[in-house]
Length: 306
Length: 291
Image (cartoon, rainbow over all chains, first blue to last red; front, side, top):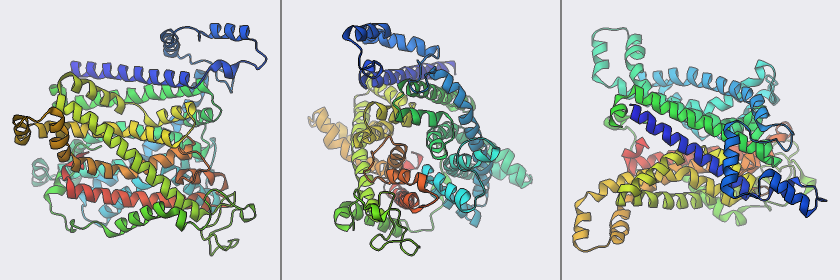
């Protein structure tokens, strides 16, 4: 178990290292930052001084070491557009992304788990077909387009909900639904097939023969075991939410990290892009690690084979 | 994505006859491929040039529609139908080029890992793990900042995101095939490693690779559209469906058709492709249900 965790930990650190190299290399490849920063009337001597001041005349591995030591301390330099430290902007914005993600997770759990379980229990009924049709549709709908459709229906046609920005609890509703939608479809499918597996097993039959109430059989006996693959899905869910939040925040003008990075791309604000990519990657890799460890804990097969 | 998928479903015989492909999705995909290939001849107008006098015309049957624009126009007066047809071409190109390249790269790496084994295998498979743990869309965002958004960027992102699944699949299959007698016989007959790999093993890998590729087409189309929508994929004014949805974003109140119609195109295409992909998998390689 410890060996397994240690192995995964090392792998996560390597992944983070690769991300940092990619971020560093791509930004360096994008051209001379001096060309952007220096005023046009700057002399050769000024430019050389600036280059020296910023450390750009040193070999690249020294520059990388410099970048990474600052990065681990949360220092990614100042935003070109806002003239403030990139990290401050991230801390300001991540609450909004968390709020959006939280609602999406809530929607996913409240809808996908019960519907998936009952679709499996009532296999072949109208409910099952409806759930499967919804899942198939859900995985084909592009999230950015669904967002616009919701804006059209609830914002423009019915005039029920606000369609952009953040403020009242109503504001979070449309972006939250859009973000949750895609994951609902996936988790519902997974819960259903996992439940079908378990419901066919001997011990569930035994529980029924024993005369336990159906509710106890389904939730206490079957669902507990069916939940194992669902844990793995947590990592995928996080990926979906992370990718989705960039898209959904752009559609709804939701002031979170996703919108921050897309705006930074538009204005070529490298420090912000670097900072957001590094922070989100760290979160992403961290959650993956957590899920793997949790899964190993829950599933002895992995625990002892590694 | 799933670890314990429906074994029950494989035990219980299906009621539907699975020998024939689902016809409606197949027809839709064929029509779309034809649209993409024949766009220059089918499209009534130019996809890039509009007339400003015909801006934001509504689709036919609505008030404010203009003759010659059955699906309306966007804010530059460009014909939506023509742009949709050319958009099919972009989706087609991205999925064909992207998946062919990914399949080739990923499968080759998987083949090397499975065939050679030892350190090569360990290193390549670690690379797969690492690649899987990197957030793809962020890499795409970063790429687009450094290089201008382009078709090539989209392809790089597709390859980057999907190669690990081919490598994993092909490695596993290669390990199994390597154990079989005909490989040993080929070796006895004096075949070189290269001949064994490409003449004897690769043909046996093809069904699985094809299934995986089919299952990926829908995903790649949505990915391209999403990247283009965010402005980090295919650059405007090229009529990618994602670009078109983005074009209509600010116009949703006056001209919903500009972004809703391309979205429907994506939805119908991807739904059909997914249904077809499931069918191909069930026909060729049902054990891939787990992938």
